[in-house]
Amino acid sequence: MINFDKNYIKNSINFLDKQSNEIIQQNLEYYDELILKNYKTHESLKEFKEYKVKEFKTRTLTILKGKITFKRRKYYKINPETGKEEYIFPLDKLLGIEKWQRIDNTVKEKILSFIGNKKTYQDILDTMEHVKICIKTISNIMKNAKTDKEYYINKTAKKIKVPHTLYIQIDRTYLKMWNENKKLKEKIKKHSIFSTVHTGFDKAKSTKKRPVIANE
Image (cartoon, rainbow, N blue to C red; front, top):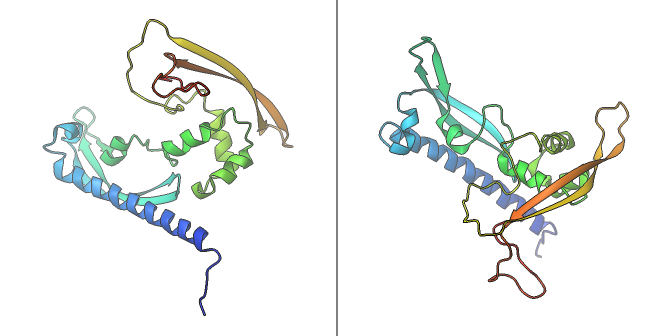
């Protein structure tokens, strides 16, 4: 008799997610090893040249597929002015991860992508069940979206050639949120304004029924 697993698809997805996290962890530790071998000579690593390796430290980071824990090296140098040791984690620096950061930037960008979709915090949490975060974390990311200059939706450093005309579209919406400042939680509406800048329509990708914005 064949013992068929009715949860085969779900279990397979969970297994692949676990494997992908392990691969990311292994690659991060591999990159840390490359830094050690090349930081004295490679031009792209010259900012770490004066440092010396002190010890290994582990770090846990929440990514889109859950949590990963990886080891990386802590480096130090003596500040000639103060005579004190200064520490740095080159791998963290190259990844753009702050020392206080526990959640990867991709998770923040994913949460912010729901702005304007009229999703409740619980809806977002259900959509991102593998991330292993709480509603309070989602609330904090949403609330700090306007003031946190490090994280933007569709953040890019790509430079484009601006034509004669640049189009700016502005829209507004009301987001349903929980008022956390009161003892008794209540739903409130938060007024948000969104703006989009683009150079017109992409003629190659647009159709008669579906125009596609270029360089949004």
